Amino acid sequence: MTQIPYSYTLESSHRYTFVSTGKINIIKAVDFSPVGIDNLYNLGFGDLLPDGSLDVDVKSNNGDILKVLTTVVQITRDFTAQFPGIELFFIGSTAERTKLYARILKMYYNEFRKEFIIRGLIVSGESYIEVPFDPQTAFEYFAFLIKKIE
Amino acid sequence: MPLAKKKNIRKKRESSLQSSKTVIVMHTVEKESLFPEKVKRANEILSKTKFMDR
Image (cartoon, rainbow over all chains, first blue to last red; front, side):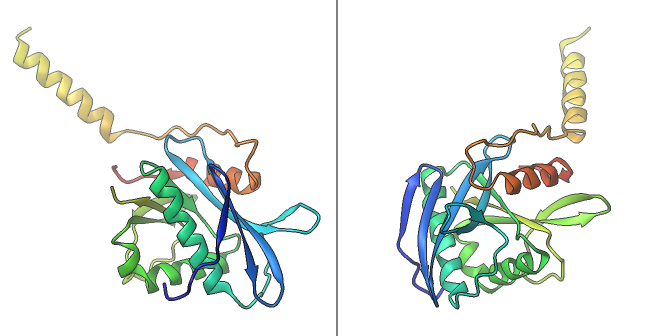
């Protein structure tokens, strides 16, 4: 990715924060939480609001989305380097945001594929099927799974 | 029963088990997660997901 990531802080073994300095300063939190399947973690990402609460659905429009996502990718690299056996699940808080993530994965696929195995979930009726992520296909991915190549 | 036959039966059983393997998702939410709703949603989605072989 072409942007330089923001500096970030490791708050605990599974939580990072950084400050988005676009139009205004916003504290962002990235959290890795187990989902109940061995070695599978959810990648959660959102804004820490001034009152200490979190907003995962916020559209901050802070003018630095690529830099913010570059930072999340860098944090993901950091986390998966520490825990190489784990796999991460992530999904946008809205369909629009999931599409944005798919676009980023497609755009930087040649870079990401050197480091990660990337899979996507596609909808099949009322369930989901895991498939290899393919930047050339017209699949509408519902969510993603990534694992560091060991 | 001859040993070779026993092995064959075991192989067939293992193969059958693998092909019908399901992933059991425990519906637990990490209490300390900053994003418990997201974890819960991930849990729900993953519990309905047919995974590729790892």
